[in-house]
Length: 106
Image (cartoon, rainbow, N blue to C red):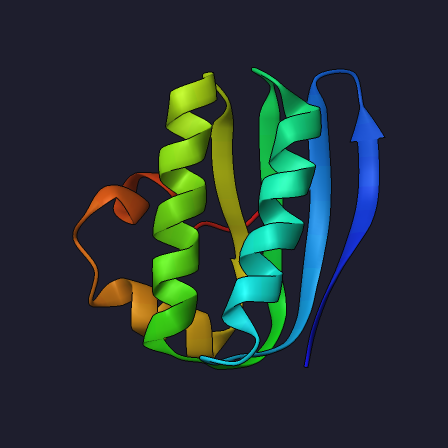
C-alpha cells in the first residue's frame, strides 16, 4: 500500500510526502499520484519526501524516472528528499537522470 499526502503548497513550490511500500502492485498508483501533483506545480519546484518508504523496488525507480522526465518536460524542478535508507540504497546504484534530483537532506 502506498499513500501520498500534500504537505504544503506555497507559491510555486509544492511538497508531498510518500508513505508505504513501493512494489510492482503499488507503483502505478504512486506514478498517478505524483504526476497529478506535478501537474499542479507547473514550472515550479516539486519536493517529494520519500522518508516514509519502507520498501522500494525497481518499479519505484521507474516511477521516479518517469516523474523526473515529466518534470523536465514541463520545466519543473524535482527534488527528492529526505530519503529513507531503503530508497537511498536503490538510488545510489542509479547514475541516470535521478542522480541530479537527490539524494539530499533539507
